[in-house]
Length: 499
Image (cartoon, rainbow, N blue to C red; front, side, top):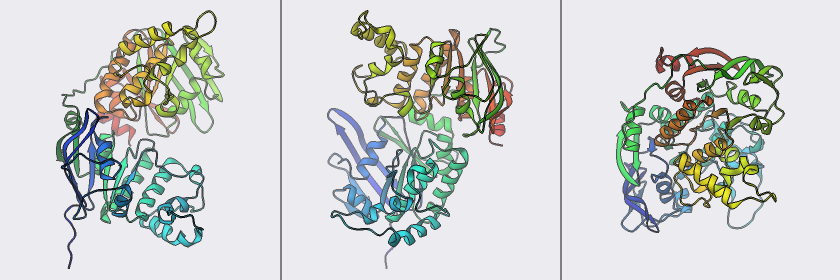
C-alpha cells in the first residue's frame, strides 16, 4: 500500500547566480497536493528564476535539493518536469494561433521526435473529457486566434491537464481578463484544487491572490522572506513584506480645484461601445475613471485621441471643438496617451531605451539636413532618465531589459517629451509591482501640480480613490456616478463598482 506524498513539490537551499549577480540565495519552497499557493514579490525578486529552476530550464547552484511527489530528483529537465506533472502557463500562453482548440490541447500528447500522421478525431474524446472536467464547453475545431483571451487561458489549462498535471504555475493569469472572466478562472482554479491539482499564482493583483490562495510565499531581492497563511493577510501587509517598506494609503485629492477646463466631453457616443458620456477635466486636476473591465473606458479614450470615430457628441480641448482623424492629430494638439498594452502599443521592445524615449519627438532632434542629431538625442534622453529617475544600465540597452516599473517610466518619458496639456493614463500600473506603483503616482501628482490635466483609467479601485481628485464610475458604457475621495471611503466606491 502506498500513501500520497506530503508535498507535490519541495525545494531546499536553492541558489542561482548569473555571472556576478545573485538571483536566488538559499530559497526553500514547498507546495502540497491540491493547494492554491501564491508566489509574491516585486519584479526582479527571483520568481521567474525559481519557476525556471523547478521546470528544468535553469540548473541551480550546487547544494539544492529537489523532491517531486516524494521522489528525490538529482537533475530536472523540462521533459522530466512535464513527465512528472509540472506545467507552467506563461503570460503569453505559448499557444499555436492557427491550430484548433483540440490540436492545441493535445499537442504535447501527439508531438514526438519523429514526424508522424495524426488523426484529429482520435484524440477529441480525451479533449472533451478534460473540458468536461473543467465544466467548460468549447468548439474543438475553432482556431485559437478566434478565441478571446479568457478561453485561451482555459485551453492552456486543459493542455496541462492533458499531460496529467499535478502542479500548474500561472503567470499573471488575470492581467487581460474582464471581471466575469476572472471569476470564471477562479472557479476553474478551485475545481483543480478540489481534484488534487496544486496551483501556484504569480500575480501583481494582490486582492485576487489573497482571495484564492491559502498560502503565500514572499521573495525579496532573491531571498525568502517567509511563507504566510493568507487568512488574515491584507494587501497592505503583503505589499510591505514584498518591499520592506511601510506603505500608507492616503487620499491625495485636492478640494475645489478652480481652474479652466482642458477637456470637455459632451454626450459622446460610439455604437456598441459607450453612450452619452459627458465629463470635464480642469488644469491641474486628476480625474479617475473606473468600473468593471468591458465598461467602455478604453473605448472612450480611443475616441478622444482619434484612434476611433465617435458616432455623436462633441469633444472640446481648451475650449475649442476638435475632431481628430488620427492619434497624430491629438498629439499635435497636446494630448498624450499611455496605453494599457505597454508591451505591444507602448514600447518597441527590441529597440533601445533611448530610441523609445525619442519616438514621439523625432522632429525635435533633427539636424538642418534632416538627420538625427546624436547630441540633441543624448541630451533629451539623459534629461528624462534623470527627471523620472529611470533605473537603467545604459541608454543603448534594449527597453525589454528593464523591469515593468521602469518600462512604464520610459513610456511616460516619451509622452512627456511631447509637452502635453492633457495626459490619458489607461491602466498605467498593469504588470508593475507594488513598490514601483507608488513612484509612478508621485510622478503623476507632480505633473498635475504643474498644471497638466490627467485622466486616470484603472480597474483597480484603490488606485483611483487614493490618487484622483474625483472619480467617475462607468457601467455598461455610461458614466453613472461621481465619487469624492474626500467625502466617501474606498469601501463605498468598491461596493458601487462591484455591485
